[in-house]
Amino acid sequence: MEQRKTFPLRAKPEEIENPAVRIYGNRFHGDQTVYEYLIEFLLVFASAKAKSRDESGNITLANKLRFHTDTDAELAYFVEPRNGFRRFVFYEQAKKARQIPADEDAYKEIRRVLMERVDADREADKEVFLNAARNLFYGYAVVLKNRSWCAQELLPLCPEMIFCEQMPMDNLRVNGAEKWSEFEEVKEYGYDPYDTFADASFDYNRHNFLARGGELYYLHLLQYLKDKPQEKETLERLLNHLLTDKSAAFRKLASWIQETWEANRDIDPEYLSRKMSMGYIPAGAYEDSGKYAAEELINYLSSELHPVKRVEILAKGVMFQVMRMQAEQTAKYLQTDRFPLIADMRPAQGGAVIRKIAAESFDALRDAFIEAIQKYLASYETPGKTEEEKRKYAYKLFVNARKESLDVFKGRGKELQCVIPSRGPYERFSLSEDVIRFLTLAIVPPGEKLDMDAFLLELYQRYRLVIGPKEYAQCARRSGLDAELTAAFQRNRDAFQDFLKAVGFLRDLSDATSIVVNPYEKVRLT
Image (tube, rainbow, N blue to C red; front, side):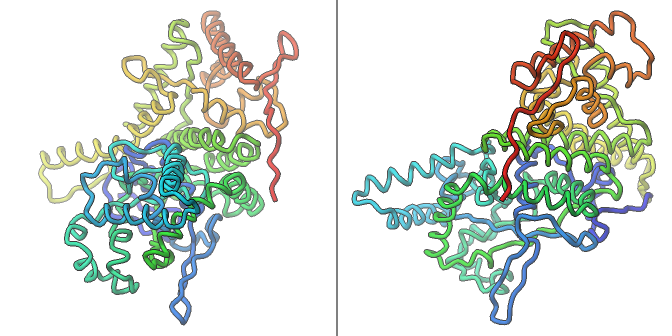
């Protein structure tokens, strides 16, 4: 059995037998959506990294909106539920299957206390204001699905709009506040059981939806940045700018809703904060990915985009970077070269040559994921089991590992429209509009330009993306291509260039020379 070494070094690996956890870290998970990867990453970044209590019992949360500093320690962060605000936004239209009377009462109560504080003469005007405020935030919902109000998410436009995961403690909640008062945590922190019951009777550690994928993304950045103080500071300032620069109105309104609720229930939010222990990645994993991701985030976040569009594109870009992490670690675990991602950029009727080669490329990477799982299982010992029991148990481990590796890669790729088609044969790579936008702004700094050949080479070096004939020749290790392949990949490159030109990212200097440009101004950091 291989010895587990992790980053951070003092992480406490859970006894999870899933091979995907051992290969890729704890963990990527099939139910985590594209937006939840970004939300969880920003949740870790924005949350406090330290919590202390003074002699008077007052609690202080420190080091928000920054990366961890002591990477030799077991890493943790402290989330603040903000259930008053979250309930106000989501409760009315969420499914009610797992709700209890205290949730309904709390929703009615927050509406009532907010109505009292709205400065208007008529009740109807107060109602209009509250509905408008709710609809404003609800319009930025990005994770709804068939979930309870406490598991839905907003676009993370500011720290107050980033919610942690929490799942109702059903067995405890159905017995009401009286039973809640007997809970050890209530006694330890001195909660008023009747004031806090509706807000605090949740489990924060199940990791069903915020399943640690965003934590792994954070950790692979931190692993690179821990010895790069200047880049770390730059990225911290840019992430602060992302979350605070254009969001003053959102922050003020969200804080007013939550603080009004806390005052009504006499809730100290710092008492309700929860410690979250970080996941871990294999030591030395994602070294190239971490370097590239940090550089790309700095470039991308330096571009002055519309704040909503910036976050929407960033979510797609972070997910595409996570897919790179998975592909890189698969190759590293198998001790082989990174796998090329041949991207079919032409429409469906654009010809069969690229489609066939791109499908073969996707099949090769899919097979590599499976080979990595099988390699781990070959070293896995199951003493005391019969051969039949070993076979069944190995199959169970294989299925679970595939769900949290290949199925994540393929499923989120299809959500990004970077694995096509959504159904049917000839699965292959492509690049969606928002992913192309992210890649361009992540590679070319604001106001600068790059020769088209150099840009395609950057895509190949960073992601092993193959678009034109030169990149295919490089990945195939050939000095030249036959005429049919050269023509097909040239048309593939032309289709990619046409998109860049249509969105203002490409300029033709001559018939033979084009440059990729980042037309956005550089953000001004205060």
